[in-house]
Image (cartoon, rainbow, N blue to C red; front, side, top):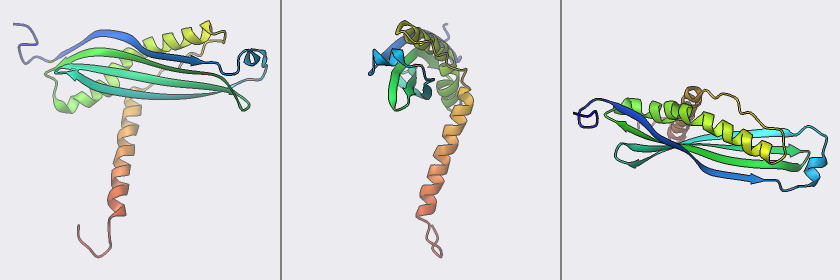
Length: 162
Protein backbone atom coordinates (compact mmCIF):
# COMPACT_ATOMS: atom_id res chain seq x y z
CA UNK A 1 0.00 0.00 0.00
CA UNK A 2 1.49 3.36 -1.00
CA UNK A 3 1.63 6.35 1.32
CA UNK A 4 -0.93 8.20 -0.81
CA UNK A 5 -3.45 5.42 -0.30
CA UNK A 6 -2.85 5.24 3.44
CA UNK A 7 -3.19 8.00 6.00
CA UNK A 8 0.58 8.48 6.22
CA UNK A 9 1.66 12.11 5.71
CA UNK A 10 3.20 12.82 2.32
CA UNK A 11 5.53 15.74 1.58
CA UNK A 12 7.52 15.64 -1.62
CA UNK A 13 8.87 18.14 -4.09
CA UNK A 14 7.80 17.47 -7.66
CA UNK A 15 9.93 20.21 -9.25
CA UNK A 16 11.22 23.73 -8.94
CA UNK A 17 11.04 26.14 -11.85
CA UNK A 18 11.72 29.73 -12.80
CA UNK A 19 8.18 31.04 -13.20
CA UNK A 20 8.97 34.63 -14.17
CA UNK A 21 12.05 36.74 -14.77
CA UNK A 22 12.18 40.37 -15.82
CA UNK A 23 15.20 42.64 -16.13
CA UNK A 24 15.03 46.30 -17.04
CA UNK A 25 17.94 48.69 -17.49
CA UNK A 26 16.06 51.85 -18.44
CA UNK A 27 19.07 54.17 -18.38
CA UNK A 28 21.54 52.05 -20.35
CA UNK A 29 24.15 52.70 -21.55
CA UNK A 30 24.69 55.82 -19.38
CA UNK A 31 24.17 53.85 -16.16
CA UNK A 32 27.32 51.84 -16.89
CA UNK A 33 29.35 55.06 -16.81
CA UNK A 34 28.19 56.02 -13.30
CA UNK A 35 30.74 55.79 -10.51
CA UNK A 36 28.46 56.49 -7.53
CA UNK A 37 27.34 53.62 -5.31
CA UNK A 38 23.75 52.64 -6.03
CA UNK A 39 21.07 52.20 -3.39
CA UNK A 40 19.42 48.80 -3.42
CA UNK A 41 15.79 48.12 -2.47
CA UNK A 42 14.63 44.52 -2.11
CA UNK A 43 11.05 43.32 -1.69
CA UNK A 44 10.14 39.68 -1.10
CA UNK A 45 6.82 37.87 -1.20
CA UNK A 46 5.63 34.27 -0.79
CA UNK A 47 2.53 33.04 -2.59
CA UNK A 48 1.28 29.50 -2.03
CA UNK A 49 -1.73 28.16 -3.91
CA UNK A 50 -3.40 24.81 -4.28
CA UNK A 51 -3.32 23.49 -7.85
CA UNK A 52 -5.35 20.32 -7.37
CA UNK A 53 -6.09 18.11 -4.40
CA UNK A 54 -2.77 17.47 -2.61
CA UNK A 55 -0.65 19.48 -5.09
CA UNK A 56 0.54 22.98 -4.22
CA UNK A 57 2.49 25.61 -6.13
CA UNK A 58 4.59 27.78 -3.82
CA UNK A 59 6.16 30.87 -5.39
CA UNK A 60 8.77 33.18 -3.92
CA UNK A 61 9.01 36.54 -5.70
CA UNK A 62 11.77 39.09 -5.29
CA UNK A 63 11.92 42.59 -6.72
CA UNK A 64 15.28 44.36 -6.68
CA UNK A 65 15.51 48.03 -7.65
CA UNK A 66 18.84 49.84 -7.74
CA UNK A 67 19.05 53.61 -8.02
CA UNK A 68 21.90 55.99 -8.62
CA UNK A 69 20.51 59.30 -7.42
CA UNK A 70 17.05 59.57 -8.99
CA UNK A 71 17.84 57.23 -11.89
CA UNK A 72 17.06 53.53 -11.87
CA UNK A 73 20.19 51.47 -12.44
CA UNK A 74 18.33 48.25 -13.01
CA UNK A 75 15.14 46.53 -11.92
CA UNK A 76 14.89 42.76 -11.57
CA UNK A 77 11.74 40.86 -10.72
CA UNK A 78 11.98 37.10 -10.43
CA UNK A 79 9.62 34.39 -9.28
CA UNK A 80 10.87 30.93 -8.48
CA UNK A 81 8.27 28.30 -7.68
CA UNK A 82 8.04 24.73 -6.56
CA UNK A 83 5.36 22.14 -7.05
CA UNK A 84 4.85 20.10 -3.89
CA UNK A 85 2.75 17.09 -3.11
CA UNK A 86 1.36 17.47 0.40
CA UNK A 87 -1.21 14.98 1.65
CA UNK A 88 -2.55 13.77 4.99
CA UNK A 89 -0.94 16.64 6.88
CA UNK A 90 -2.99 18.15 9.74
CA UNK A 91 -4.65 21.45 8.76
CA UNK A 92 -2.88 23.35 11.54
CA UNK A 93 0.52 22.38 10.06
CA UNK A 94 -0.28 23.37 6.45
CA UNK A 95 0.37 27.13 6.81
CA UNK A 96 3.82 26.43 8.24
CA UNK A 97 4.65 24.01 5.42
CA UNK A 98 3.39 26.36 2.68
CA UNK A 99 4.86 29.60 4.09
CA UNK A 100 8.09 28.38 5.68
CA UNK A 101 9.25 24.91 4.63
CA UNK A 102 8.44 25.16 0.90
CA UNK A 103 9.90 28.68 0.48
CA UNK A 104 13.09 27.48 2.23
CA UNK A 105 13.42 24.83 -0.50
CA UNK A 106 12.65 27.20 -3.40
CA UNK A 107 14.64 30.26 -2.26
CA UNK A 108 18.19 29.02 -3.03
CA UNK A 109 17.20 28.54 -6.68
CA UNK A 110 15.80 32.08 -6.76
CA UNK A 111 19.00 33.49 -5.24
CA UNK A 112 21.16 31.76 -7.86
CA UNK A 113 18.98 32.86 -10.79
CA UNK A 114 18.89 36.48 -9.61
CA UNK A 115 22.66 36.69 -9.06
CA UNK A 116 23.23 35.10 -12.46
CA UNK A 117 20.92 37.40 -14.44
CA UNK A 118 22.30 40.52 -12.76
CA UNK A 119 25.88 39.47 -13.51
CA UNK A 120 25.02 38.54 -17.11
CA UNK A 121 23.49 42.00 -17.58
CA UNK A 122 26.87 43.63 -16.91
CA UNK A 123 26.48 44.52 -13.23
CA UNK A 124 28.20 43.00 -10.21
CA UNK A 125 25.98 40.20 -8.88
CA UNK A 126 23.73 40.86 -5.93
CA UNK A 127 23.75 37.91 -3.58
CA UNK A 128 20.49 37.88 -1.67
CA UNK A 129 20.85 37.22 2.03
CA UNK A 130 19.47 34.14 3.71
CA UNK A 131 15.86 34.68 4.71
CA UNK A 132 14.15 33.55 7.90
CA UNK A 133 10.82 32.55 6.35
CA UNK A 134 9.44 31.54 9.74
CA UNK A 135 10.13 35.04 11.05
CA UNK A 136 8.50 36.59 7.98
CA UNK A 137 5.48 34.33 8.39
CA UNK A 138 5.11 35.19 12.08
CA UNK A 139 5.45 38.90 11.24
CA UNK A 140 2.72 38.61 8.58
CA UNK A 141 0.42 36.81 11.04
CA UNK A 142 1.00 39.54 13.62
CA UNK A 143 0.22 42.28 11.07
CA UNK A 144 -2.99 40.52 10.03
CA UNK A 145 -3.98 40.14 13.69
CA UNK A 146 -3.30 43.83 14.36
CA UNK A 147 -5.35 44.81 11.32
CA UNK A 148 -8.25 42.67 12.50
CA UNK A 149 -8.04 44.20 15.97
CA UNK A 150 -7.86 47.68 14.44
CA UNK A 151 -10.96 47.00 12.38
CA UNK A 152 -12.79 45.63 15.38
CA UNK A 153 -11.83 48.57 17.56
CA UNK A 154 -12.94 51.02 14.88
CA UNK A 155 -16.51 49.74 15.19
CA UNK A 156 -16.47 49.70 18.95
CA UNK A 157 -18.83 52.26 20.45
CA UNK A 158 -18.43 52.92 24.19
CA UNK A 159 -21.49 51.98 26.17
CA UNK A 160 -22.70 49.42 23.63
CA UNK A 161 -22.15 45.71 23.88
CA UNK A 162 -21.02 43.89 20.81
